[in-house]
Image (cartoon, rainbow, N blue to C red; front, top):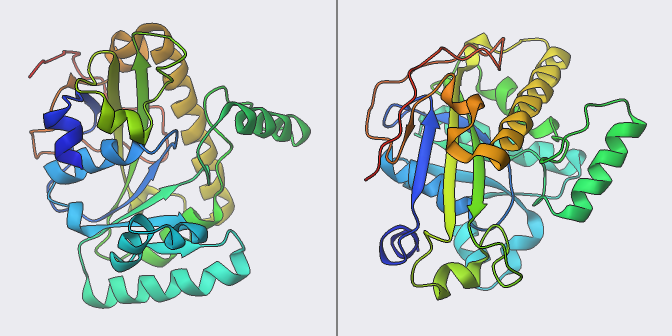
Length: 282
């Protein structure tokens, strides 16, 4: 499926931010807009030799979808019910296996808990108003229990990093039959995806040892990360990859070719090192 997206149907994905080393294990967090998000994540995993080692937190109901859900189950995906009492034991069992074998792994968690839609965004903003939280314009409020459990269980193990991926889409033809982003049918039906669509992933890498050890402070850290992500997405809606939020501190490139990582400090999510901006085409 990745071959169809990137090669056959010419979906062009650009990347920016911190560079990732091949084979490093990590907790991966990302925003969630569409089924196309999986193509974005897998494009990075392939380039870092981690595609066979992806494990997703997924809604329990997905395992009943013919073929797709069965495949997720066979790959060892962690199906959760969003009931923490039921899910906690499952998560701990998975972590015991990972720690015992020191297996390479990317544990992917969409912290919004579901795909962001206009109605869900409206509901999330209303919740934020009632609870005195920062109102996000492009993201749902993050659900933090699963992430906190991941960090608590995997701190001081071979899983050394948190990767924060911000996925962005741009549609050059804003018509009714070309919603943003493309759905699964459009991905496989359109012979050329780019244009009209452009795809981008901004990457930030944090050392787990730098994350707050106090769980309340860790929750606040996640919230700050999501505010940064929201600001970036808002800026990209106006200027795409020429956005100042990108140009001021990162490299924009069409392929994650380098294997030497630049590591952002976890204690200050918005304070990435200042890198010279450039844009490369394939």
